[in-house]
Image (cartoon, rainbow, N blue to C red; front, top):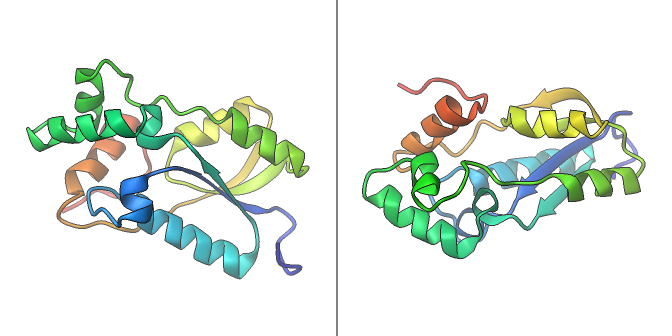
Length: 160
């Protein structure tokens, strides 16, 4: 962490997205969010916690199966339901353990996901500020982002 870092650390808790983070998929905003978070942490100091919970916790194989359902017209929530999964199965217990290991009880969180903020609060971590990551919108992920906003409560602007 940079010595010029603010007293309250900047943190990104990022769930693995092989297709977005590594292969640059335009179906989601994961890769651009990770890149923006790394830029901000590189500039301001802070911590990236990268969690191995692909596809909102359903795993890579199931995520690819969900893509098939999405290609047939379902949104991400409907596709997960079709496969027998809840919309979001991610667990932030490991992130809380990492934060506690580093003595972080209060942070500024880079996220659009209020459920992530709530999970940290429930674990006794103070989220002093939620900082949005509004990146990666394109014609291939408009429906995905709208679904995140409308069905999962992510804090994203309305799209034209």
